[in-house]
Image 1 (cartoon, rainbow, N blue to C red):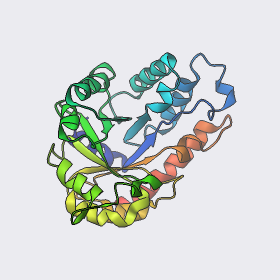
Image 2: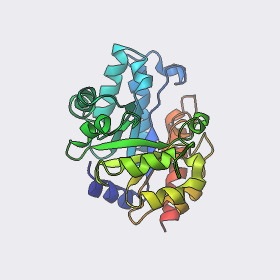
Image 3: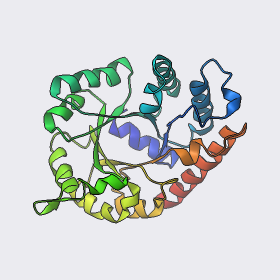
Image 4: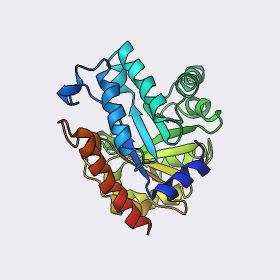
Length: 267
């Protein structure tokens, strides 16, 4: 999915919601555990309940890799079931020397046909650029995250900037607004104005709204640009809204609440 298509989806659905499919076998309703593929059965029900309310799904690959071969099967089936009307993100946080990153790009863009993948920029440009060679695909670079450990490196001084600012400045020159996004955590809402001065036109993938307590309104007010430029990721607050037989209904109610708030913000 390219930028034009993504913006059209946001306008038509009046939503910039991304739902995270961080599907943990130990947290899905027990009634699904007798299914041949419980993880896919759970995901399918969540997707059916929410696909008209969101513009993106983010599949956290760790939850699938942890299941071994069956997890990869569940992930592929989920990806195929979502289809092409949503931006589908592999939250895999890859990044290695160039020839290895090239193989990661092939794995997620060709073999699995994701639209985007999260990448770690620590090893520099040659670890990220292989992901930027694919038409209508996106590299989503870790910028400012919402975890406590962000203080260890991201928020440390690097010359006259903080390290995360240096990363944003430098990495934004490796690609364009059409093939790069950046992860900016919602719990750092006060930083969005500064981020937008560095990245006025790029899309930002924003985790941390929902279970982590980030404010959707604050993020929107400080982080939007002319094309909205935000994907607000919500995972647990939607997919685990209920652990009972009504899990899909409750997931829809939770997603609808976010979509309705977004529609109001969009005006």
